[in-house]
Amino acid sequence: MSERRNYRLAELQEIARKNNIDTKVEKTRVKKGWEGQPKGLLQVLWERGWIDQGQLEKYTMDPATDDDGKVLEGAEDWSLRCLMASCLDFAEEMTALQHVGNELGVSVIITPKFHAELAGEGIEYSWGVSKGVYRRKPLHSKRSKESFKMLVKECSSREILGIKTVCKLSRRARAYICAYYALYESKCNGDDTPTLTLPLIERLVKAFKTHRAAIDFDAGFVNGFVPKIEGV
Image (tube, rainbow, N blue to C red; front, side):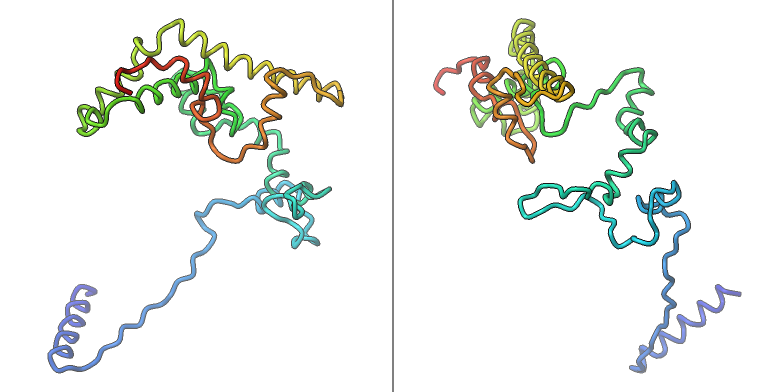
């Protein structure tokens, strides 16, 4: 019955078009509801009893800051992200990447954001050496897809990243890890002046806000492992 009705409607629309008669189609706008939608932080925290319903206007996604970007005192108590992070089950929840690694039988350990120098076994330094070699190669070796693939394999081969080189890069990363651990220990002990190496972790790493590559923040050290290329 509905097919016949649709056919009849299309026939009438065609007749109207041939006779230059305007037609109008009315559609009902359906408002999207909550069913099937993921819960937000506010809803989850409310269900756990963390939300003061009488002061909903105070809650923000991130803690409020002053003009200098410093978190205001007590602002974390009204930050949805901070409140959610304080829930033990949420803090210990595996990320999607860790879950996939667990299914494959491997452990995925996430290093702190913006601190690439801590990456396990100096992987960021190894990547920096490979990029340093790649940048020194002539342009004609990067033009075609096949030559590009061959060049990438060459830059990450054992000839470039040998065992001795990788061990030195890993030792560099461990030096940073020890420095950060010393800072952590000093904070736990309540010391006012942390005793750190690597010039106070490069002045406490200057409050990084972007991705850091080893070839950028430690170029002199990384380029020391890049083989010299004639004519460059």
